[in-house]
Image (cartoon, rainbow, N blue to C red; front, side):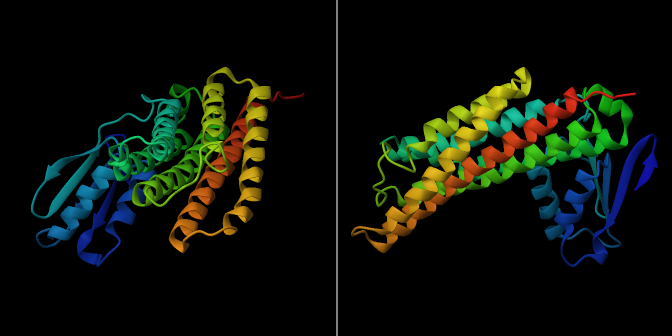
Length: 289
């Protein structure tokens, strides 16, 4: 990585790569590069251009500033200190909640059209996680970014951890939505019984956690952690009953996968609460002379 007018840049020679360009682009993005140059000794191949388009689709704050036959220059148009971590965390929370709640609503009779854009929402969740990690890298390397974000290194790293937890939660929220979309006619689970009965309470406890990133009420965060842990154990205990009775193998498999995904989003909620408690305890820590 090189300095260019106080900005950082990285150059990738696509001629030397037979594959893996997207991984290198993501790596440059996460490391905080302001300028990413993709160069080639001959005309840049169509596949490379497609990989760059996919990279721009899956990230935030990057645009093409130069597009020539043998060089494409990607520029950062977003100052990492202008957007708080909380904005991205909130957006991830909204997207995850919408996936789970829409899947629940379809199971109680709403139109399947609610789940027509699962892939897009999942992609947005992933993009926000990448953005948070990019901001954290900038905060760790540049004190001015750290100050402008109103954070320190420990809290910045915990925000990155929370973003990763929410991304994994989002993976299971999307999996749940796909399962409901593809098997809505065979699923017979009742919303008054586990695991579906857990969804409204999961949604309420997750809301408490996100809200208390602002209000910082430790007792509420800990209470949400205990509630989510209890839900997880209840769902797990109920999974043994799924294998009893006369059900088709297709229905049985779908309902078990749904139960597993709901259990996992509760488990990631527990992880979220733990990271939040770590961050808040760090803020309360005082130096002793």
